[in-house]
Image 1: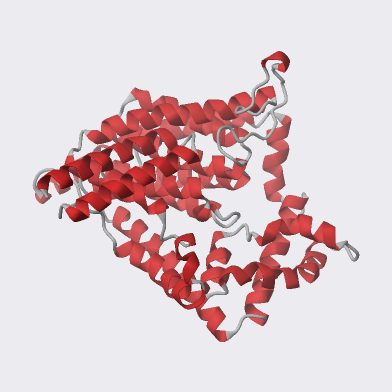
Image 2: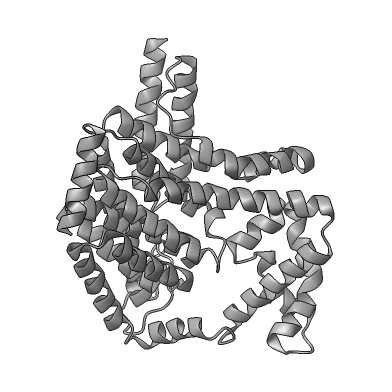
Length: 425
């Protein structure tokens, strides 16, 4: 049994390192990392060595409403909920760090390289106008005007989500551990966020940096944030970036904004008028998009002012029914219970990070600020349900809870250290 548990533990650690390589650059390798992690978990269960494992309480808020709905309405698709392989990095990285805290430094080093590669791929694509996965060397040239880029991942919104999570992680790690090597992923993930032109993550980054200054109240943090804002001001002079940013301030500036408004309107109309009581409570599941489609024509007319639009045109603007709002997504798909579970999940995470006052409080307050930015971005897209983004979030949560539960020294000593650092800042 002991030998089986040892093999399982090694596989879990390998899984954590594979995730550090793959999360920024390869969804295919993410799945390999998850498979290795699952095999490790099975062996640990057989060897009765599954402990230590991360807190499961926050996931009970998130998963129980989804599992109830799946069992009742679509049991074959239970693994299409948040109860899936995307949870594996949460366990893998948590256990690896708890077993050997020095692993965290190695994981962050590898992750800093892969994050920088993703950021560079976005920059390359933005200024060469070539897909980084299909480079044509014969026609390779540089352009002064950047285009919207996605780099190694499959969509600019997905790329923006992963880069944002990495941006938050490495700023938090840099503040806590003061390692200059983390400036590289901070710079390239920040530039990647700019050039993938995902406006929701521009907003998320602003919210993150604002709360970072408020919660940290640290001179070094202020210098870092001011430096990043100055760089942003310089990039704002690029016409494409300026136009894209200013479109955020006008709800009807372009069809992307109109589409979101119409989709939100359609989903809300459907939820209020067409859902049964049971569907309002537990969600309409995969019927949610079909119900929204029935309300989309009237919603699009209300928002756009257009009176006549073809069915083909409507379908183009419907985006397959994606809400582009994570809160509406959970409300319509999983009902009031699922929505409240999603909110409770994040409230728990915010609370435990806010009340933590021990050795790694600089790191955890940085992550807290980042989660607030992520939740702000969620008002404009379904960020938490993207596979690549969810892998990244779960990976960071695993690190987060490993730090929250890392006990160094007596409680009184830690509290004094915290108070001393606050007074010096």
